[in-house]
Image 1 (cartoon, rainbow, N blue to C red):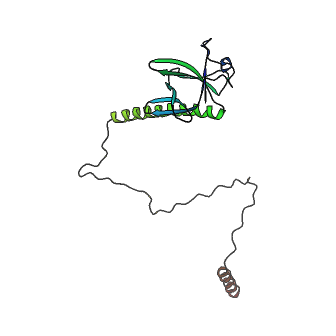
Image 2 (image 1 turned 180 degrees about the vertical axis):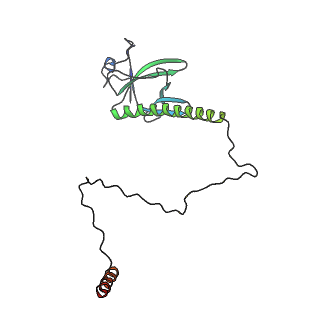
Image 3 (image 1 turned 90 degrees about the vertical axis):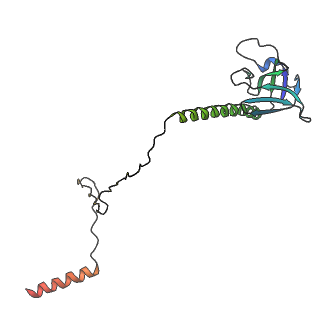
Length: 194
């Protein structure tokens, strides 16, 4: 992460990293960046890579202008750093787009966390104001439950064949061996009777 001294804003539309000079060599400071959030506060700390000494701190404000993306690149930002009641705007850039993306995501996660906590408090406040109903049975009260047609067989209606289905109806299954023997015996008895 690299910090740049930036010129004052020339237009209301925003900052441009291309106006900061040679971005490869004209930087003010180089180190690491840490985002520290605790409760409702979030700080962006710029620290020395080896010693951990803090170079600058940017208190992150959700509604304020503490972090602003530049217009011409996704890797550069303008931070409002504060020290001893004074503030200054500095440019900040990342070597890789993925680092800039991670920076944005970390700030968005902080905002989402605050919103979720606020919504949870609102839901809890609304849940407690509604009166609770007592659905318990009083002394001597009973409940009767009637379940109709418990043992009755349900018959399904066969679908009506309109004759236009185009399919050949299935044949009934063949008779069993015992049925065939019975029919043969009945036929013999009828023939011997006549």
